[in-house]
Length: 429
Image (tube, rainbow, N blue to C red):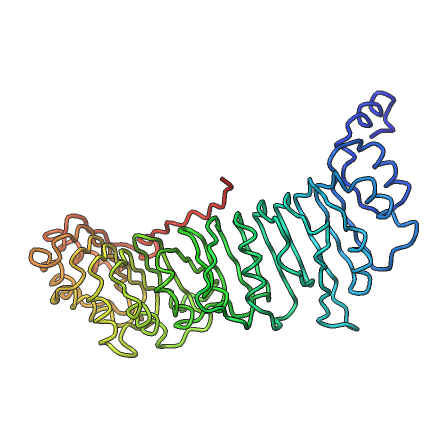
């Protein structure tokens, strides 16, 4: 564009911010960009598959731009990584984004070099986004107070201690997004230590078992947590973490049991990756152990409420004294629960009930539902709304008879009856 005419050339050359992206590939081009970028913050992207030479553009860039580096992206090989990092030992007061990726090679499988703590003089106080792939950091760096996004990834899981990662989280109190790919710690539990991630909005875990790490973290209300969780081990410390919120979203088949419950402090949901026939009861048993009296909303999708031990389910529901909304979809044993609601002093504060009428192609007995509705005058005095999912016309007609006892009754396809309070927003404050 600078070759169109003299006027264009003068305009584009005078805009220093247009010359701030440095690829460090050609020495002559790099020197031209350095001159025209003036004092503007610069973005440096470096891809090196061989060792540095004396005329490497990087060696020209670093001395002249270190005080105005805005973002740095490094893609290196295991054998030239430390040679590159050695050039980045000076402070960078404007650095906001740092990405370091080490290429894996067949001759050196699993080799992950370590970042020395002298990188950028160890002071990354201006850093907001940090992404590390196949490189092991020496944590913590000091002054990570402005960091909001952290990604750490490896190709396979390996042994790592939980302590350094907790130290790092403590040094970065403004973290909002965390991604761990085969990077969860495997040993070094620190009994009694809890680290608060007060501003966390989302945490994604892929590969590895996050249970050890979660045992030491306090997750804030409305944070989203996704990963491979299998009950009941991941619920072992919910008692001490109860004032905080978890939402577990895992891509699973429709037949997979999913359990969500919430209370005055937030919400929890779980969808195990490899559910067993008794998964639903196992989770409910774990819920009963830490005390479900604060739960106000409970959703069960799939599984069998009675496959393991009906008494476990019964006593768990009997203790839900503050439950206000109950949703059960595609669950076996639904008729038993409906019967309990109408006959026992169970869930006295229940206001909303959502049920899927079809279980393995059969409708549950609507007579049980009518008996439960009649109980509203004596026990379920707060029940105001009942929604039943069914395409069966006879079920829909029978459901309308519940209007004699319940103020609001709705019957239709169960998918339409489900409401999700998660709007998926991940906006910055």
